[in-house]
Length: 632
Image (cartoon, rainbow, N blue to C red):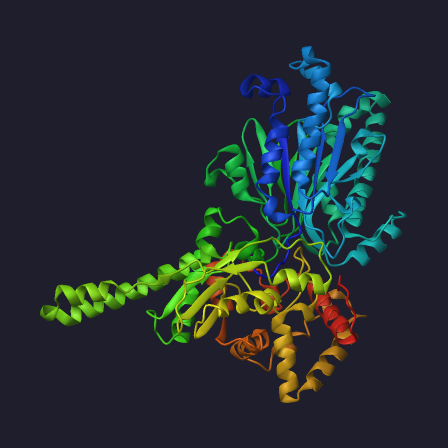
């Protein structure tokens, strides 16, 4: 994607269902779980490269022996850094005592990070925050084994203030108002409460304090804890947790906004944000990996018993369509087909824009993830030409000769790799001057790929801010001397903030918003902006359930085409020679291409939770008042 937008994170959970001796005998290593977690995290590094974390729990350890380990990194290659440090610790221990290399009991007692229960996390730093304290997994420690809690997730909560206040009302004193802290402390509160009640009940049955521990582990109802904890959560989330004694869970939000997939056999239970990561790492088929239903949790008890429990009543499924367009790995079978379909459905708009002149049009894409939608678009162009050729041949009948036939068959889409990505723009560069200079050099072009006077049709995943288009891509494409540059977005116009896990928080960042604002000024309808601001201000004191998205009225006076035309005008550098046209995917075709993933709030303003409306209205207030801050 030419506009750098970021997904916040991805999770991996592995529960080994056999003793470590089993994996040593079958796979030749007691570190089977560690190795698999390394692969799981690497196969999901697309979901975050600014930080990574790893936590493990060893089952059935004696008192005084360390049973929990955690390691986190914000180095330039955080996953590699974590596992380099883990391997160093393992190798150092084994060099000092090589005779114990195959002694599982010794390994568990003396080497951290191995264990039967492992949680991994990758993340992008959000809103400038990328300190080690912000990296998952988070740890809530307690001297009672059952009350230890490790949490990592892929989520954003829209009602952090409300959740924070709830904790205060429960008598807690949270150390900061962050969604991860508030979520973890809420779970922790009900975990503490459940353990305390079980302890009292078990003592009444005549068991001693020491004897109570295994009974607490057996009777603890994780599903009940999660139901109480998540009652007031408003957001998109896949939440993973480990309890100190060995229970584990992954909970998905009731709208299915954030993804979660799982696989289970007699050796392992694995849960992840990406289906193909599980397929590849465990060498299993597509059908073997299941999607965790919205509002449900997969719960693995210490005993190894696995259940899928409904925690929250599922709502209308609004799985994030941006996952399909860009964030998720493109080697997922469904996503691959959906991205091709997104490209295919754009071809009729392109054909109209070039007046059917395919001979004169060069087809290309902005690397790298737009390649799949490019394939779909080009294949549709080929199908169109094949039908046209068939009609021409049939029309000529007996007048057809080899020379004419060759001339007809020789027409095909002109495919070129025009743009080349040279460098990765690191996220720590935030100063406008430095960023602008680097943006201009992120892409290069293949000289000679376009002839003077050609139309150049180039597809991208989406056009969010348009910064890279204006400062780099359009300028370098113009060097090829095309008559027209047609930039095609496989996603619709992004008009509204996302508040469920994607770094798109401010309205004024969106080029569609800037275009609508310019149209209001062109037409002298600034009073609409004032009216929307007043409505948003009035909504601040109301309950979330009463809120509506007033920002829809900002776009209402204009057609999608009018906004696209204005976007092309805004993004065209003043010295560009070529005519610039921008084509966006339609909402209707987005839903055709991704029928099971209808979360489209960033395009339509139809938020799946009440908190979304509050966020977008606050974002408009921030814009109007000139406040450069997030709305949630």
